[in-house]
Image 1 (cartoon, rainbow, N blue to C red):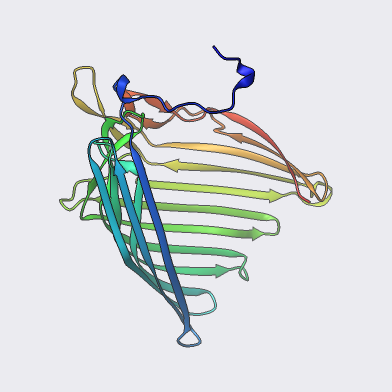
Image 2: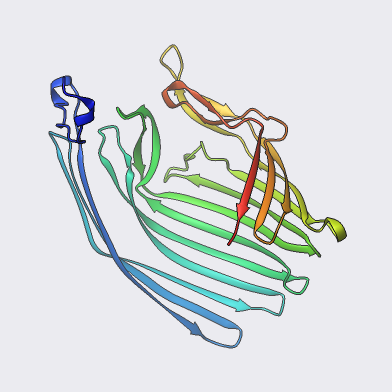
Length: 315
């Protein structure tokens, strides 16, 4: 055996096939050109038009079966318009076509999935209050996609999920956001979102994603001699989810995670002009919840209550 002090980093590639393993060689090439033009149609109406030409090429060989996929000059346009109703409110609408490579997703045969393609439309209303210090918005959206990746109840040799593609999918939802300053040194950040996703037959998709989420966080900088101290807290909530798993009898079952909320607290102290100290308490109530269920018939729990002390230095 040679001396470890003579190691130069060179080591021959193992013969994986001799040990029953297979190797896959994947080459992905992507490029694109994009442009946009902004238009002032009237004093109250503005528009943007743009697009991108996408080039995507995939070559893959797993030792037995070659896979080739190529899309040249795939054009994805987008357009948007904003109308100022008055000094407080503005309405907008947008349209975007989608072309999204999925090189990180593979099927049960360990082959890369083809790109997702489709379109997204959105309409919304924005408002500015308290002389622009507080902003709110509400939006409605719809996304239609083909080749949307959906997880299988199957694990690949490298331990990742396998996926299959679904065509004719439709997602619709609504989002509400509120952020800004309610009063001097008192800030708020909040929002609620809800969506529903189905395939061409109306079957529910992506059940592992919560259909409704909400968040609210606020901070307040203390007055007077305590002005170097900022305190805050918040809560996030999400609706229930489920994933498919295999029970001991070999049957497919749904593993559920009920809705839950997580609370947090923070305090930040401005020690100097360049140094901030921040103390954060996450998962204040030590809520036990799962981030993932079903994979390898395992359950992965989220982080328990934890306390983080951070020092930030700015030049």
